Every structure is written in C-alpha cells, then in structure tokens.
Amino acid sequence: MSAPVVDVVVVCWNDKAKITTALDSVFALSEVRDDATFARVVISDNGSSDGSREFLRERYGARIDIVENGANLGFAAACNRAFAATSAPFVFLLNPDAELKAGALASIVDFMREHPRCGIAGSRIYNHDGTIQESCGEFDTWSGAFLRSSAWGEWPLFRARANGADLRAWGYHTQRRVDIAIGAALCIRRTLIDAIGSFDEQFFLYHEEVDFAKRAADAGWETWYVPASQATHEGMGSAKGQYSVEGRKQTSRRKYWIKHHGRVWYATLVAALVGRYALYAGALGGVVAIGRRAFARR
Image (cartoon, rainbow, N blue to C red; front, side, top):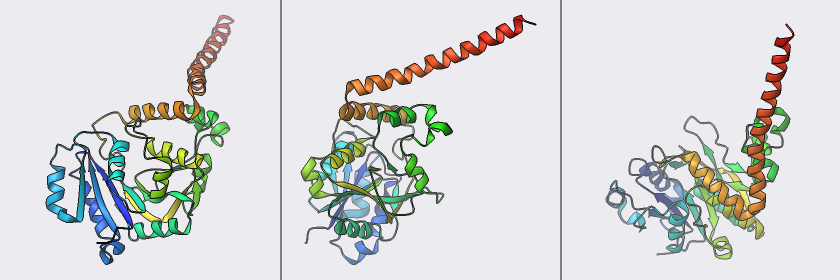
C-alpha cells in the first residue's frame, strides 16, 4: 500500500461518547472515500478507561491505527507518540470533539503544497451554532500579555493594544499569515517536525501549539489560516468536569512566558499585575477620603 499523504492524529482520553463524530467526518470526506491511500487515521490513546480502544477497534477495524500510551501523558506527549509512529508528509491534528467539513483535508494539503514555507496551517473553525471561533492568535509582547491578563485589555483606551486586537477586527473571512493557529484542526508539515523537533512535553495541555508555532517562526517557517478548510469544534470536550481549564491554561502560559521571554520578563509582568491592585486600592482610598471630607463639611 502506498504511503498516505496525510496522517490524521486524534488524541483520545475517555472520549468514547464523542470521538466517532470526528472519525466519521474524516471517512466521509470525498478525498478519503475516493482514495484509500490519501489519509491514515491514528488514535493516540492516553490510557482511556471507558472502553474507547475496544469500541474503536470494533467500529473501525483496520481503517484506524491505535497508539496505546498506557496513561494520560497529556496532549503534547500523545501527539509526539503519534508523530513517531507515522511518516506521511503532512500531519493533521483533529480534536475528538471536532468535525471536518467537505474538502477539509484536501484543501489544506493543497494550500501547503502551494506554499512551501508554510509549516503550520489552521482550518476555519465554527461553533455548533454556526458562529466562527477565534482560532488564531499573536505572539505575546510584554504589554500585550499584561493587557490580556488584566481587565485593562477590555477598556476602550487600551483595547487596540491588547494581544490579538488586529485579529478581532479581521473577522476570519480570508486566508492570511498569522502567528498562531489552535490545535483543534491543524495541519503540520512533516519536514517542520524534523527540523525543529516535536511538541515540548512540559506543556501537558494548552500552549503546546503556541510554543511549537513560536519555535517554527524563529526557524523561519510560516503559519497560515486557511478558511477553505473548515471544521466544527465543541471546545473543552475531554475537559468538562475533569479539571480546571483556566488553571491548566495559566500553568501552561506561565511555562511558555518563562521559556520564551525569561524569568525577569515574567517577574516584571507578575509585579505589574499585582501592582495594579495597589493602584486600585490607592484610588479607592482616595475616593473614600474625599467622601469623608465632603461629609465632614456638612
């Protein structure tokens, strides 16, 4: 059998109830139905205890390969195990709570073939109600990180300077080069993995694709948003009720900041974020003092 054009990698952790939607959407694509060698589907299972592996083998048989990790290694490590077990020139990461739309794989592979410096390409992602998810981002600057991590980024005076402000105004209707695309439906060129290495496994969950995109950009590769490739994504599918999503995100974000910006950069950011509370307290104290003086004059 010929080597596939793209390896579709789905990380599974107790996702028996929803993963069939993702897998069925892959097998329903015309590019997959018409050419059995176009795509190979690889499940990287993180020690599921809900019968996922047995269920998937019974339902899909030889149409899928399962990499058994034996424990919940996290998303980055699970992807890396799948990368090591595959060899197609393109790898497409698909969340188990995502669903591909017609032509999703063919269109994104065609785009990457036409843009040889594109190492990462993200699909256009919809919520289940048909609205578009904000699936792209910008690399952090110190001021952008401060504004995003505080309420100040939503103030009209500062909103244009907050991280991702340009993307919010753009609307996700046209293809464009971006800094970051989320990993829910993401295509990666194999030669990029060979060039810079796979995901950093210190990121158990969240920010692994941000770190990867930053390393790719530093090595001269491009990340693009490709709206011709489309998917629907529920979001936090495996996370619901399992752990604090915001806590995991903050942990990974902190690791990313220290890795790429250093401890001094991070320490000054934390000091500024803490310092704003002192500013609030001072302002509140001033208001109280003014109020007391005004009351005393009566």
